[in-house]
Image 1: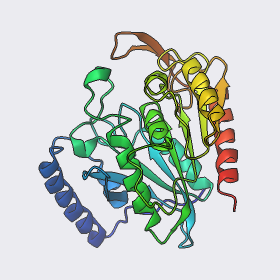
Image 2: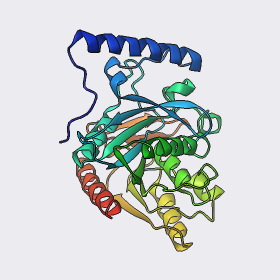
Image 3: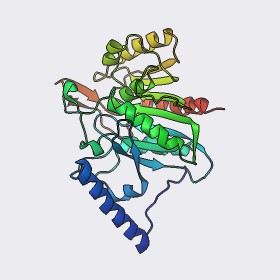
Image 4: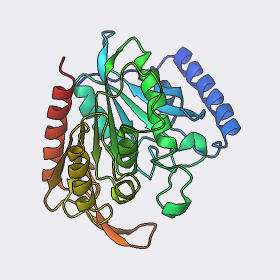
Length: 305
């Protein structure tokens, strides 16, 4: 596995720099209304500031192989529960697990945080009609802001950036990959090379964009037993969008897998979601292993010259 950049050294000089960075982070948080949201101190070394297309300054957490050669990159969009834990501000385990998988393949990884600088840590408990941050509105702006940032880094191959999302982040990925996405910058030299998503909700997108086509090849991985974001609407959506002549949207559906089936260690359990439904979530080991294998192959093929 490739080593992560930005480890915390033991010298007093580094500790002083970390303390200064922490002070600056708190000052920034006060300005943005996020002062009460903690950040695990070790993440400061990996934190980068990114300008969203809507003018908001958001955070990302950057990890890269130990090489200065331009490498393909993977941009990760978190779900409705956010990127960071509520109490300690640590990266959540699903995102760190995928980060390590992609790093092991030699890819630069950017974990994008769409919530903290907007004053939120999670929006899962908020009614869908009242959510302050939307997959079709702010988050495509965030994705294209992050793409611009990555493409201007000397260690990133600007033509080889993939976009991935989970749940609400996968919905955001689909809106971003829309061939008619209004957030796509004019004159973009290189769009995302490919896109992928895990268990998005496709009902709203299917209704609002009946003529949807994808701008880039897209791969969806779904759980057959997902009763939070049902798989059938996404299967129908992908089939229709591909038939309309855009880039292909392929789908893999895993038997007996529920929402969050790819989590590294999440006990299968029942939770109540914002609309009052009781749904199953949790790890399905066989589906998770198959999904890891499939996404490795998908990205390797997508990044081929």
